[in-house]
Length: 356
Image (cartoon, rainbow, N blue to C red):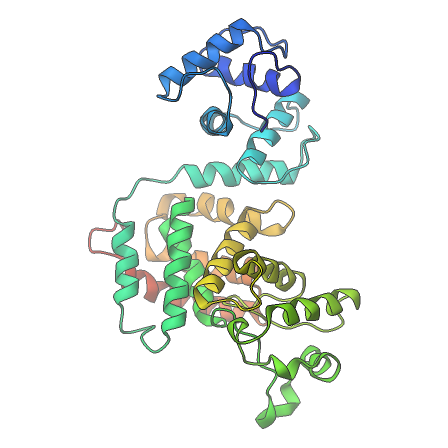
């Protein structure tokens, strides 16, 4: 949102005035940042122990929006300005909605997702859960890169507000996919008959054998970007899996953009940078209103509301994420397997005092 101060005017000032009134002020909603609005801003800053200067910065917007969004409801007869207010607030927290004032599934699911993230029961033991995962010697001791990936994903998802059981579900899916930065193998020498057609296309037309089975840390990032561009220009005639979730097609392209974001101008990326890129990409996908993934978390949470704090909830999260987010071949069969793995990870991470 724009920084506002005395003399500002327009729709954002109207949103500001409405938010301040919700927080207890009694302003006229006229879109003019005058003396009364400045006084209301200063009072809000004082109540929230913020710098008292009457200037509405990003920090002030965050404080104004976060509780208001939890209080609002969205329904088909909602006023257009109310919907735009909701869209503006959600965009402040990274949901990237079109501010059209129209009731629709993207805005509805964005609001549901926002509320689900911020209505988590406080739990001070999360660091203990992650420590238990890091110290485990039964499941991940033979694959240090996979362990570090899961630890990182667990950390950032918990910090983002996802319930522990849902995080475990994501870890179970990552456990069964590739390692961090890993290119899907096209080496089917011992069973060439089952080699997927898309990998044959990749090997024969795009020189994919130079990448097969390697990791993003062992190849030129510039070369990978050029390969992605060629596939995009050819409308994805071929494809390949990449990373700890084995993202494919347009998702793979977006993942490579995240690798570039953390690598900067460097042509090579480190393992830690790749782990960070993949973790950040997971968070982006789970809340991106342009894709179908945003409803998975609030749907799961609503369905498991009465049995949220249990290995059964983690099992269900793994199954839902397998079918609706990771989406492998034979997803129904693999969902069962990943649900079983979620139970194992849950028992590894869970201290004795976790609620059942």
